Length: 339
Ligand code: NDP
Image (cartoon, rainbow, N blue to C red; front, side, top):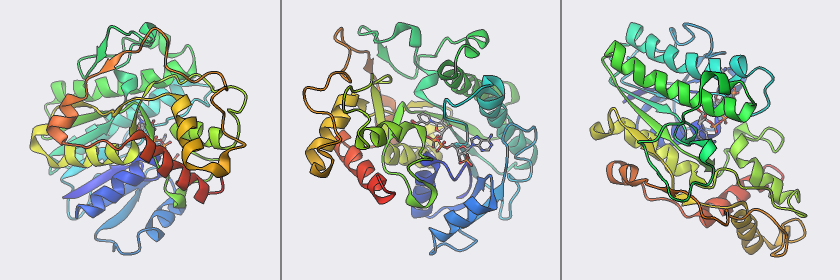
């Protein structure tokens, strides 16, 4: 298929790009600068312009940002929209989180409808942030699935950056489903809802200082920041970035994934388990990593919500990587950039 991938410089998108190319698709990916396009190109020397090309989209929050990018020769058949801000370093929740997430999502859908009538499949990276009810915290009696929606309101979204981020993903995903219902476009939509995404970084785009948000806890553990106390885990469920990336590509390829929401998670983890896996597999970090006696980082004593990931397993057939393999591969990739 001829595919437009938005945000190709991102942690998750870098792996989506590799699966798309491996599966024989021809990809144009959007990036914010020529410099990022050059780095991605350089890291994929065996793919010519017909297989891997670039479009510059500097700010997805601008109306019409994708109008040019969705037009290609040969024309696109599918779009995977991953670009969206994921960090908490914001002073203006609306401008820095909500607008790029919501306008970015509706914007790409509008541009496709208006200018790319050959597109049949759209896959949008949403999040467990749009499923979880943060007010229920550990909620041991509940099982989360695609049926759940974060009840966050527009007013609460401005409370703090973490609520703002979760709201940005919730409202963006809702706006995609509203678009399908109201506009009846010529394409189907699938949304991918992963919780914390861990896994190897691609070396050509990353440094230890500019690391994607979700892997920062592994870096912090390796650098000795957890030596005295392991921080609270927070999310409690995870998935490996390669399993998530493959899920995006399979959802694009498989007809029966159309117009469905997918909860993409392997299951539970804790920060303590991250420390234990690093201690077991990388003795060179012995002095930096917390010991068995270090407090913190465990699962809640009262128990934790359960997860139902059966739809992703059944329709996409993804086999989840183990937590230990994922952490080991992540640590190796962080060592390669100097950790
Ligand atoms: P990254 O920060 O690595 O990637 C974000 C991507 O979005 C980058 O390509 C970034 O470009 C681009 N982007 C952000 N804001 C804009 C903007 N205003 N205009 C144009 N491009 C923009 O994060 P991830 O790969 O982790 O996240 C990708 C997607 O996955 C997001 O939608 C995120 O919400 C979602 N997600 C991530 C999870 C995780 O644990 N990592 C969990 C659940 C969902 P640039 O690099 O140039 O800044």
